[in-house]
Image 1 (cartoon, rainbow, N blue to C red):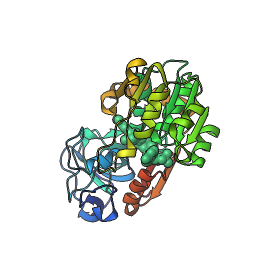
Image 2: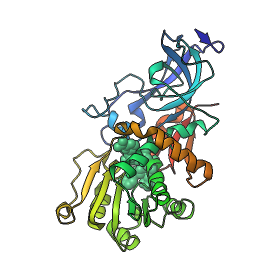
Image 3: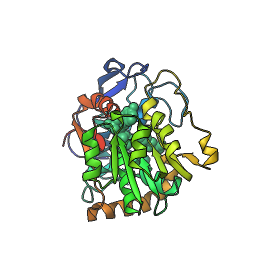
Image 4: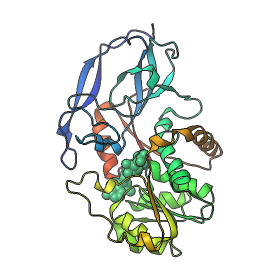
Length: 342
Ligand SMILES: NC(=O)c1ccc[n+]([C@@H]2O[C@H](COP(=O)([O-])OP(=O)(O)OC[C@H]3O[C@@H](n4cnc5c(N)ncnc54)[C@H](OP(=O)(O)O)[C@@H]3O)[C@@H](O)[C@H]2O)c1
């Protein structure tokens, strides 16, 4: 067993203490202290440097059957994190290594080494492995190129366009030869960023008027691909605007994540028939086979400056829940991450 120096006696971690009904409230969570122990055989102890807050975590707060199990009450929540190995009881990892692993929401994580992946802080900032080079990035890449079968010349519309996934979808579409890239986001500032910094051809603030009207104005010749991060009014508007043989990747429906009643479906589903549309769900976990291709291509675009990314960084484990709730409310531009200290 190798350890860096004296380990701390305790670590703080966020527990879910009540299941939210609708919007989560601070009293649904508690920041608790827990003892830190040396890692058992095959485990490593990681000091987390960055942890991710992601929309799918809202679903894990409900006690319902889904593709990931619900968070357990009075247990630490989980999620992507990057940190430094401070004690290792596994020959594959040395003290000082940086790793990506699934035990965020805590300062120190006892990680089964088979669930940790080494990451190189020299190639990209460590937080990038939670965003542009991580799970949201792969979602964007696979969701556009594989699930929507994007091809050169397609006109692409993406909702949630100023978020982690959406900002990457639009840029990948541009880099791969889209005829037009359109995005929607929740503030005029985000819209400006999409057009002036990321090279979107058009963007609109969905809070400024009906989505359908704004989308039609931005896409006078219709769209061939819709990448849905939002659902609801956006999905209905996209179905109306998709051209014949259009494709939609259904990636997320964040507009409904805090609803307490079932969401009404789009009222124009019959258009799917006449226009021979394809709407297809994506789960990033099905696409890890593309990881190497994704990393290679995205790292190249980052190095050349052709692909840009932004992170909204909230400091301190004590602000983890605020960061999560802020992300659900749209306080992030690009990926929302929590920094746990240097
Ligand atoms: N299927 C998969 O495997 C997979 C993997 C990763 C993510 N996702 C999904 O992809 C979507 C984006 O995830 P992300 O990690 O990139 O998050 P994100 O877009 O970085 O952050 C969430 C954003 O959602 C927007 N939003 C919140 N409420 C909204 C509403 N009512 N209408 C429209 N926009 C709203 C906010 O931006 P505004 O200011 O623009 O409102 C907020 O910044 C989510 O739906 C997520 O569940 C799916």
